[in-house]
Image 1 (cartoon, helix red, strand yellow):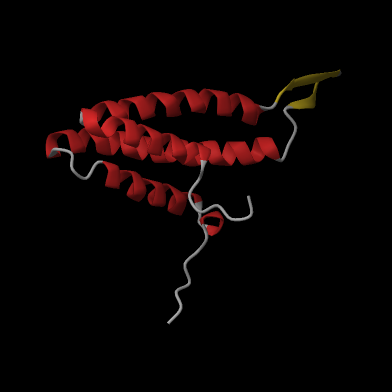
Image 2 (cartoon, rainbow, N blue to C red):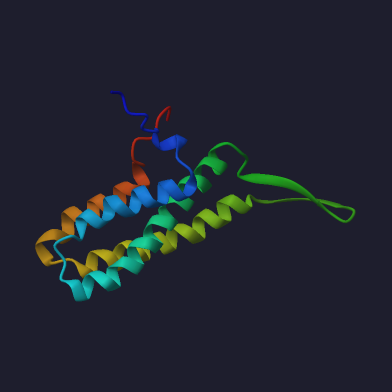
Length: 129
């Protein structure tokens, strides 16, 4: 019996977020319950931020970094709104990564930090990229 498992690119935004949450929760499964509850909120934010960065990166890669726009009678050039949003979001992503790593026991911090950063540098199972 063949399964009809979707590739990462075929997933909806909410499915991508859920997949990321599931994957990162595995890093924190050994965490004490009192810390895990706090980590849950950070994990949710991390997953949303990670998927948002992927979407913004796709938009940036498929568009122009500088765009022309008209304001009244003037024709102006500006930085792409997607690029501006990406730059802001990557700061949040970095802060969330640091907060999540800080919750881990010392012996797990290095490998978990590397794995968290791989969420943005190597999105899971992205086909055709």
